[in-house]
Length: 409
Image 1 (cartoon, rainbow, N blue to C red):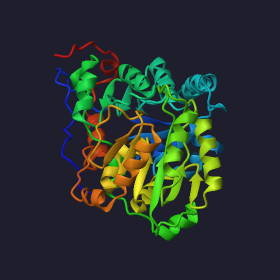
Image 2: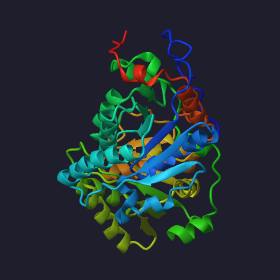
Image 3: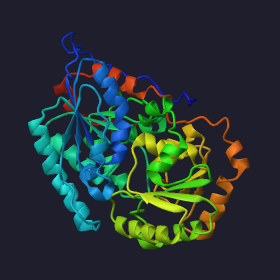
Image 4: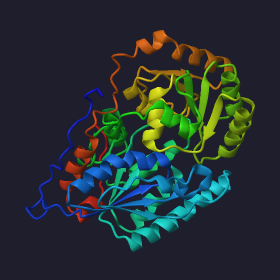
């Protein structure tokens, strides 16, 4: 896969450390995962850490990994030699604000207990979810340095945006994907030596990815990928004035006359999730060439994208990963507003006519052909190696924990 060269080497800490200070001290590393997407993104990093034969590595798997409503994805976490997967249970039932808040509250307690039982020198947190913020706060109270992946990004249509920036201020070392993200972290007063622009981890695995054959996917999903197929992934837009029920109705209305198979992937555990899930289930019952699966493994999901004509919805995979497959994407609404979108992405408001027009354009042979030379700006497949290099060069824990305000110039 070809990717743009927008990634820099880790920025060294230019303060004067003693020889003893330069000795690598990070031995025990814990990675926090609370959704199917997290685990897939971490995979390349976990493999790189394990292959280094230098670290004791664990994956603390909480959140929807243990929920039947989201596919029990803990059962599908891929075993990586030298990495322990530790179950952390904290998910509450329901998708209202009270239930989502309860899940986050339980997450703080559950991850605190996990970190007590499984001490770590460094904890990795990823992205922007409420339960990830809770886990980051637990690590902060335990005085464990935090490494944050995908900080400095923007998703202005969801309150995840605020959670991401809150995690940035808790974190002690930052691994943003793009230079613009690194600059945003600097604008938040983070010291430049803590910030390492490394690319998106998901693209490490995607660079070596080979799709499963269509008949294997048909046995898994029920979809005949020899016919034109749209993969649909839509999550609640949690800061929208439009209700989740209205959001999904506009999308489904746009898709109902689309002459393609439709494969829906279940939504995230956000406020309003149940309304979206129920509407899709009713839609699928009335249309024989459509189906819904609660969750897919990372490579299975990418295989579906590799065989699809178009990806429709508001998943981050449409913004970050689909460009590597040169797959046309219709990004619906504002959930991903603020993210750099590659040339394969067509934006549409939450409006049935606008969505329908965008899907027709994305599915056209002309638009697909225009992507032949597309380069993914989010990475080059070597992110994990950059992160491990930066870990080895970290200053001692006592210095890493004591942050100073560094006004942007």
